[in-house]
Image 1 (cartoon, helix red, strand yellow):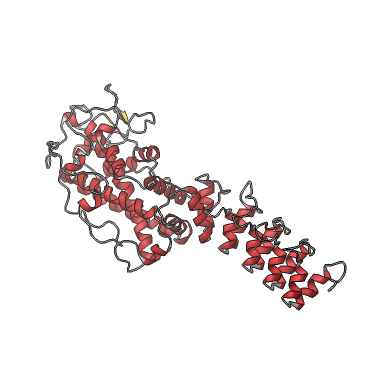
Image 2 (cartoon, helix red, strand yellow):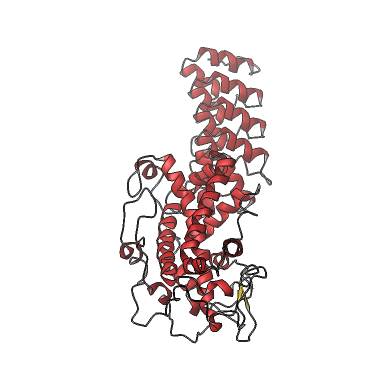
Length: 477
C-alpha cells in the first residue's frame, strides 16, 4: 500500500496533534500523545497550513528522471489541498522580533547563544517565513507521493536497497547524505532570513534546531548500522503503515507550548526527511539509468509492473536478484519469515535454485536459523534438488546434497521421477556421479523404468556403464 499524501497533511495539520491543556511545554517525543483530540484557538482546519502562498519552486519536478508537473497534478489525485476561504495566519513581519505570545512566554528577549540548549527554540521559531513553510509542505507532499509510487513498484525497493548496502562505497554514501543535509541547512537559512539579517537567529541556533529535528544525523545514519536505519525509514515513509509513519515524523527533541510552532517544527521534520531520502533514491535512479526521461524507464518496466511492498514479496525479489545483503536486512532488521513461498508454492531455497543464485542458496542453508525445509516441493511436485538437476547445475546439486537434500525424492506428478532419472534424461554424467555417490537408488522406477533403462533407451553409453557399476548385477535384456 503506497503512502497517502493525506497522511502527511493530517499529521502536520495542527488539529491532529494533541498539546496538553496545562501550561507545561509540549515534548514532541511524548510517545503517549493522542493525535485525535486537539482543538486549536485559531480557525485552522485540516490542510490550512498548506494554503499560504507557495514559493516559486512549488510544483517543480522532484526527481531528475521525471518531467515537470504542476502542483495540482502532483496533489489532486490524492486529496484536495487548494486554497481555503479562511484567512491565513498573518506572516511574520520582516525584521520583527517574535511577539510574547509566540515566544516561550517570557518578556525578556532570549539569549541567542543559549537558544535550543534545552530543546526550547521559541526564541527563533517566530522568525520562520510561512511562505517558505508552505513551499516545503507542497514539495514534501509531492516527494511522498512520488517516492511511494516508485518504491512500491516491482522490485525497485530491493534494487535500491542492494545499491545502498553494497553498491555505493561507504565514503560516498556519507558524502551524499552530508551534501543533502547541507541543502536542508540552506533551506533553513531561507526560512529564517529575517532573523538572520537582524542577528536574532544565529547559525549555531539553526544547527541546534536541525539536530533536534533531524535526530538521525549524524549519530545514527553515519554508524555501521546507518544503511539499515536508512532503509527502515524509507520503508516506513513509503509503505502506508500509519502509526510508524506518524511516530517517524514526530521524532523530534523540541519543547514548546506554542501551537503554531508545533506545525512549523513538524513541517521542517517532514521536509528534511523527505528531501534527504528522496534525493538518495533520485541519485540511484540517475546513475543506474543515465539519460532517463520522465516516468518509469525501460529497465524499471522490465523489473516488474506489480505494486508491492510486502516483506514476503521483497524476500522473493531479493533471492531472485541474488541480493544476499538485502535478504539479510529483511531477515535481521525486518524480522521477515524466510520460510515463505512464492506464487508457485516454491520456497526461497527453490527460488534460489531456479534463478541460479548460489550465494543466496548458501546463505539460506548455512546462516538462517531455523533453516528452511530443503525438500519441500513446489506445486509441480519437484523439490529444489529436482530443479537443480533440471537446470544442469552440478554446483547447486552439490550444495543441496551436502546440506542433506533427499536424493531419492520422487515426484508423484511425474511418474515418481527422482533426481537421478532427470539427470539421465539430460545425459548429465557429472550430476549422476554426485547423486550416486550421495546414495541415489539405481533401482528406483519412473513409470516402470529405472535410470539404467532410460540410459539404454537414450543410448547414453557412459551413463549405462556408470549405472551398472552401482548395480549388484548387470541388467538383463
